[in-house]
Image (cartoon, rainbow, N blue to C red):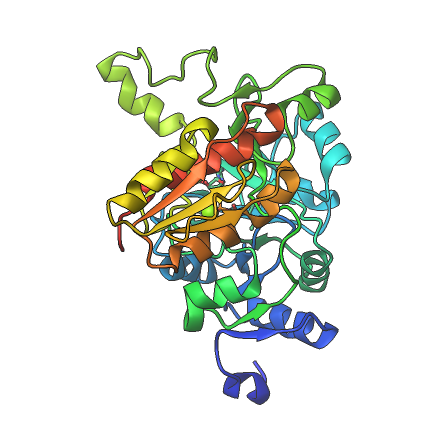
Length: 359
Ligand code: TXA
Ligand code: MG
């Protein structure tokens, strides 16, 4: 680390110049953690081959050590160094969607540290499409482990300022790549078991995957899916099966959560429910994509985009703003039951479950 770097304040936001990208790569090489923009959400980056650096991610996030991290690669050519066996369908998907918001879970190569995989025999890999993330990866030249740069369980960051607010001095610096284009996390597709299974929905939909590999992946939690190993497994079997099932903190029921209690309300009931709560003296923030603002001065009404991509882009920033209004409730208009909205509805459902927990 240069003398210069040593005196620079931690947590500062740097514009995405080549100098800043080189500095970020140098900090990663030195075992430090930095905020990195991606096209989905901001990541908290560390050298994926440095266990001590990776441990700093868990400490900064307050994340349990057995929740594995995604390793970001400069290109698909790096895959064989990180994954042991790569099914041909996984290669086809990497060709189709990388760089982009698709994470592939594959059997890990031996050199991937346990700290990254949470001790599992698999590793999550993706090539991000954000030009600044790609530049950081190319200058760094190896895998970068990066979870979303928020405190564990909280709302993912989609701007450099969000990262600074959440992790402040815990990060060496944040490279500012502007607001994230997608705004929700990557689709996670598990190839480590018999059938490909989506563990987390994202911008790459099950149908888009099916068009490439010729079969629809299973979607964890979706109605009609074959029962997971947990369900119906005998007592003696359950522990062994639980050890096999990949852990996905993004799939915990409570996640992405604001501190203010959040409720999802069907469109037809939204205005009434908001008025009732306000009538009881509650301060109510509303996120609505279809409803017109009823011009009720007791409500803090925020119009959301009616297009799913634009809605996803704005979602986390809007939730963060709603969470700063000192409201008693955040009411969110329930989303259409259509494939393009499913990943967003998934995040909002978890935000509702995890909301209102103060901490
Ligand atoms: O879009 C994204 O994926 C962002 C950006 C920064 O790339 N990253 C992200 O990371 O969302 P994180 O750690 O917040 O969520 C990754 C999820 C976690 O729920 C983790 O448990 C799961 O991926 N995961 C990582 N490796 C895994 C593995 N080997 N098996 C199963 N799940 C895994
Ligand atoms: Mg996360």
